[in-house]
Amino acid sequence: MSAVICGTGSYAPNYIMDNDRIAELVETNDTWIQERTGIRQRHIAKEETTVYMACEAAKRAVECAGISPEEIELIIVATLSSDVILPCTACEVQREIGAKGAAAFDINAACSGFVIAYNMADAFFAAGQYKTALIVAAESLSHLTDWTDRNTCILFGDGAGAAVLKSVPGKHFLSVTHSDGEKGWALTCKNRLAVEKSGFGREFYIDMNGQEIFKFAVRKVPELIREVLRKNGVKQEEIDWFVVHQANCRILEAVARHIGEPSWKFPMNLQSYGNTSSASIPLLLDEINRQGKLKKGDKILLAGFGAGLTWSGNILEWGI
Ligand code: UT7
Image (cartoon, rainbow, N blue to C red; front, side, top):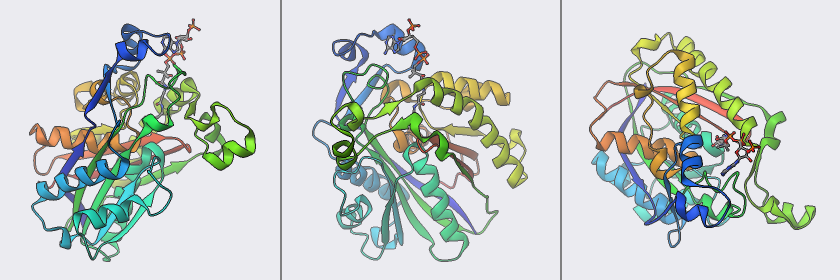
């Protein structure tokens, strides 16, 4: 059995913050941000919560799939920025959309979160345990952003994306996930307890060594893509789209160059949303789906990477 996506949805907060507005907060400018990252603007959750965005994206995905919420057997939400510690966001989504019978839980795998959630649902399908799943990724990174730190505040945005997955007969693709805890220091965000223990300071916010993460992504994502292809006996030319975590346009272009693919095969929407961590891949999938770019049977290689450090990939066949 294999997983196919049969519905997508997304939600981006109403408030849009462009680069000129950021330049009023820190010493930067629109030209620098666009040249170094590709980002023009980001959506910021002033009123919306993580749960609200997750539910909106989920409802749109369920509507797109044309199923009733009661058919959903499993809900996984990927987030590093839940509103509260308990209850988990997935249970809030289950209640709000009325997916009464579904098992629901959250995972935190930072920017690899959506791909790892997809891999988990796919593994449950392969084991024969579930046939219909809802995967959501939702992030309110603006609450974890130090708006006086130009290394990070230019990058991040808020939003959510979701996909309904169904188990169908067909080739089952094997996922690849790697982690390197030794390099965890390169991208951190402490919680309240950790801040209290270490003394007050900037540590409460996302702290990042941008160059280290940049080098890691440019080295590891091409390796990941090759490993996913090799493991599944799929030739690179069979892949129609490479949907990669939207962190920086220079990372996406470098990955495309390294594996010898044209950059149009790497769709991009970070110019409008910034880096929304786990939500970036489903936000992009929903956008290109609604633009009519994806055809039934298209092979899509998903690749996520980020804090942990973690990196994860898989292949899916478009099912809509
Ligand atoms: O989801 C995964 C998590 N994160 C990422 O994927 C981020 C990966 N890293 C990056 O995207 C890039 O490293 C950044 C966009 C964060 C930074 O770009 P960079 O090309 O690596 O810049 P840099 O840190 O090497 O800085 C170059 C120069 C420095 O000035 P000097 O020393 O050359 O005079 C910085 O001080 O640019 C300066 N600079 C800035 N200038 C204007 C750094 N940040 C800014 C800024 N505006 N915001």
